[in-house]
Length: 404
Image (tube, rainbow, N blue to C red; front, top):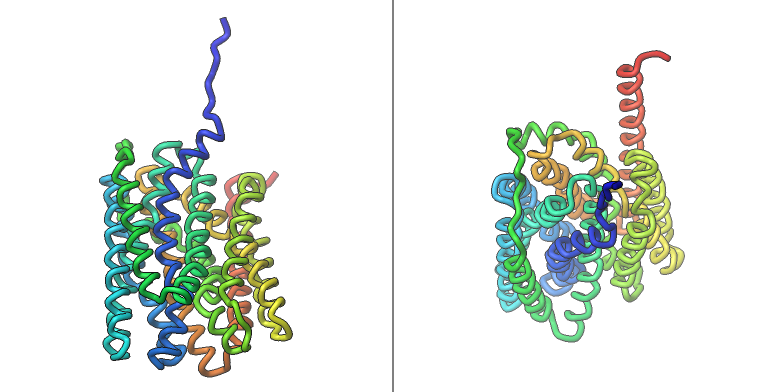
């Protein structure tokens, strides 16, 4: 009698992954909610310049950077559940501090100081959530679904930010920033109790884990390319509302929404392209598309150029993280997957962390119109490095296989 081999049902696998990355979505919705609100609040209400606004927005990535490695080690040793619960507590605390900051707006320096603390605590939450739900999903469905898990996690993270940012603007407009703080607290509590109810899992491998910085060194080439590509995303998320204000346009949050929609659309439609074409090839196509999008935003003739540019940039950036991430994770053993994803994720934190002050300096010294041409140039440098990485990998494969 022929033995029947049962294979995992793709829809069942996808549902399991979605159940975990929903926590990522909630975490990044918390990050997105104040993203489009705070730059204008800091410049218009508190009276500080664009450089200060950029620093405050980006300072959260200092703690995100420092917590990534710690979070990855917790995931590898104790499992993703403790890290996820800790992240939700941090987000809830950041919501409380945001509420306190707004109550102190009569004193701009005090308000700004509390906002800095708010962003730092939010950074701790992001650092702990970054590699946790995705590893939780991978532990349940297996390493063979790594690409799908990374893609879905990316949809959850950037989708959360894309939805959170315009939602924050609407809340600020009709309720006040206090409403943003209240929603952050509510979402964090929902995330905490959802994570609390999930089964705790951790890696059963007996392989020795490597030091975090050794893992970091392995994923470094892919991480640098990711960081350069992330400048385009960071500039749109942090400065598009200020750019609209400078151009005397309205509804800057609409570009954030369009960015998020095309980002998610590309992830869903082209989710198998990494398997079919390979991460490097997909990344090259993504960088070229992102450059075209940023070039369109740079044309100040009409608001619809900005909308179209944001849409194309979102489409282009959509697969950069999973395309390079799949290649990076291949370099480590299963006992170091959490650390590898955490180390790789550091580079998007670095990218978003430097985007605010760097683009703020460009805005102050060269003018607001030059921020997107500048970001386009940075992404072009990233494209050149990816092409170099492709050639380097080709040379290595040739040396391994030998002449035909």
